[in-house]
Image (tube, rainbow, N blue to C red):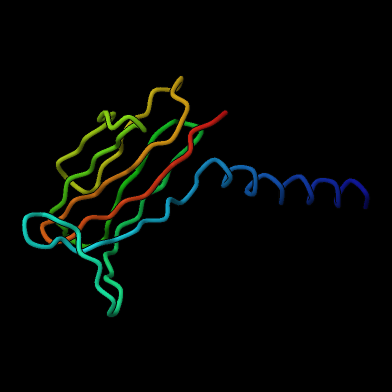
Length: 122
């Protein structure tokens, strides 16, 4: 009976450890104004169905959307250097395994910009 409980405990802990390798990146969405300036609207928040997930095990950023959205994806360092780029929304971007620091993921649509930050650490 002890072996059964021990085996059950081990099997239940495996999915928890595997899911910790991926983390969801929260996005802030703003509407573009005239001249590509960001505007802050005090009305209802804008909703764009885009998901950004950072996989710590493979050092990749997965950007996906179930809707057909025309957008470009940029990954920038703290200094503003472009570390990754994709001209389509459903993309997987590789991050160098030796990179440490803060990354900004910018997703630019025709009328909106979404941004999120990822802290890369060991």
